[in-house]
Image (cartoon, rainbow, N blue to C red):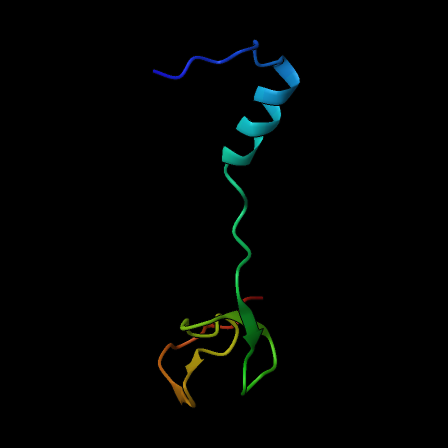
Length: 63
């Protein structure tokens, strides 16, 4: 059975464990073909209600 020859230092084990932290996910976004507003991929536009060239949501204008 293999046994370590020396003690692993705190900085060595900390830098190895730093790779396991949760990274933020970058959201892919594009612009709406109707109004040009930024919209997530595979989602209807929140400002105009269009998805894939047709209106799927009725958007009420806020005052």
